[in-house]
Length: 214
Picture (tube, rainbow, N blue to C red):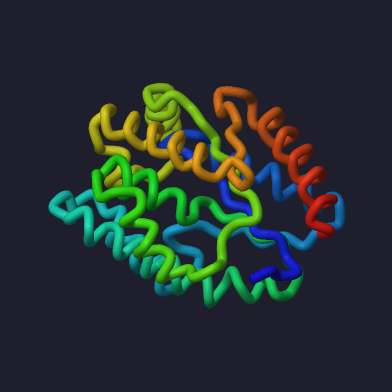
């Protein structure tokens, strides 16, 4: 279903710099007179934030991968219907820190549940609502984890504690997903400065919005 607004998601492994890029992207879009809503997954609304507390809690190391995937999908559904869709219906540009592709890369590929299997769970959750464009901030996992270690203000979550091999599987998962959806997913080298990263996004958005008539 097409909405008047524009749905943008940012994806990437741990330490890719999504949060910083989102702040700068929002600033650039608002400077052009756009109405922008920034949100995140899991989270963004009360119910989903409570689910986030469970999913990312460093104490819950026993969590089964299927449980993890289902919790993400549940949070995503509530977030979508309560916050994202209403904004899109009102012509707002929605920027989400993560969406379905995170589940496909992390639970589908890195956890070994299968990208297609996790997509079926999420298809039920999101139905036909997907981002108009997804910016995948790609960074070497070891470099991303070093960024996290250096940033004392960033929350440390359960996924940060996974072995380095897990994070490389996440990166491989994103590569596969990007190959499957080349029209929607745009890879950006996250080793660049945030300003350069956002300039690439803005150039791409200007091209896309002209084509989409938005």
